[in-house]
Image (tube, rainbow, N blue to C red; front, side, top):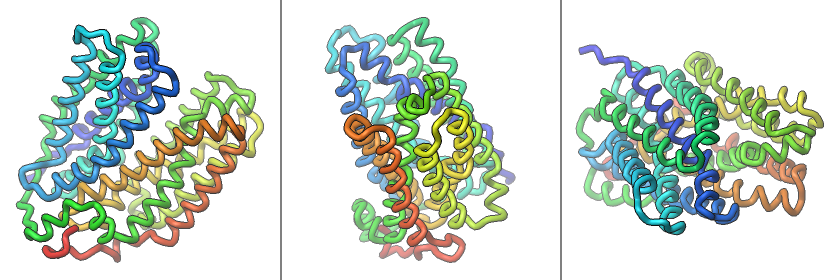
Length: 403
């Protein structure tokens, strides 16, 4: 029986999640500052939420991999339902307590970030189970959702204020629950894992020991992505140092988003012509270039031009790592492979957000970009040394050796 093409389903899921991400994460400061939190407290709350998600991602991945009754789709549905429930509490709860509201909001941010790597795994499930899907097109719909959501909710928030934040993300995740429910990809085949191996699978350190080179490579990816987060998080400070304004910052972000969108659409074409590990290695060089050139340029026109590096930097790395983690690990480790890849991004985001601001305060924007460049170079070297050709290398699946 011919299986249904699920590209549109997956694309709508990614677009809806991205809209929810915009309202819940990008506008978090609007809501939390309105509650009465300070800027410092907001940063700490978001960092703690991200760190908790980092710690939980391998465990959730392990549950999916070793439990034949669990699936990526089901876990994402549970997370989405919880976000809706906690969002409703923020909207309708009778209390007027800043600490309680901030804690509930922080839990929702944690769930939001926890879901990220499993959205990638959801697309890989379709590929692994033989469903026709254009992963690049589906993922690009997520980028389009983010862009449209940012523009639309920016105006809505001005009209209705901070109280509109929980309303907006609750509606978005209600829609996501429906889309996940009707998503036609289901887990196929029985997952048979030796009892000894099943106990081992609960230990994330044994997973990393099994995939040693991938574990070291992820350290390199984390350092490369750290430089990316510095530019994204503190883009206003960078643009201001070049003589620009917040409007210029928005223009630069739009150019970068369009460039990475083009790459995501063309990624299947690239995959047919260039080996995956070579693309990932090259993408790291473009992260170095973007960070270093951001330091060198002295005006906004030049800053606009260097956004093109996003096309072969983040556009390739994001798409490539999803395939790399899926192709390299064994059948019983798919979800955890995506989880650990997602952890490297989340951990880099937490560290860059916490450290970058202090670097700017004490040493200035230029020094932040120099440090980011150095770390990106180190990360690139690590990736180049440890990256593997997935067409030739795959850890053998063994019932007694499943991490």
